[in-house]
Image 1 (tube, rainbow, N blue to C red):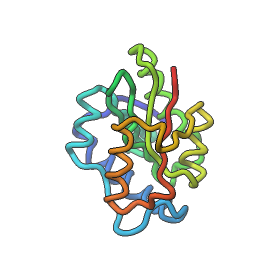
Image 2: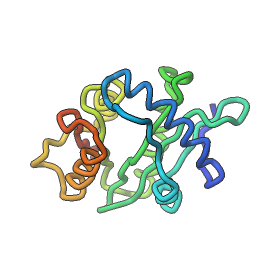
Image 3: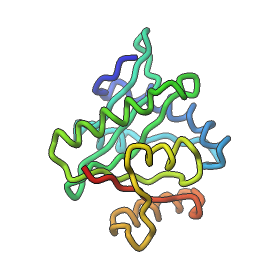
Image 4: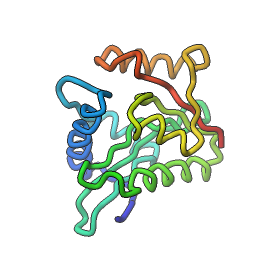
Length: 167
């Protein structure tokens, strides 16, 4: 698998990966309702920060991606998805490592994200990288706003959590 910086020409393929992986999240109880994918605006933000990476198979087809942005001297990981046909092969680990290595190279203080606390490929996966759970009182106002927006979109508040990693 090749991991490379993404371009705006990859956006449709990235959304296809995200929509396909939505069903894995649904099966784990992390989401419900109609599948949703990142907007051009969200993907462009990752691209503008040079923090959008795509994983491609041997034919050059996008099978995963990870995107983030810089805020408060931190890397915020906004989205990471791997197509169900390519899950459990270490691809998510490679994508996240690529993004975290970029954050370290930029001398950032650490990384943050929000995720599902129960799905094994979410919070428990991130914990293997050293991310720690942040209870609501430990969340920055920025992370609280992100969690609130996710709940407004219909995600279960009892399952949503913020996590942080210090570099």
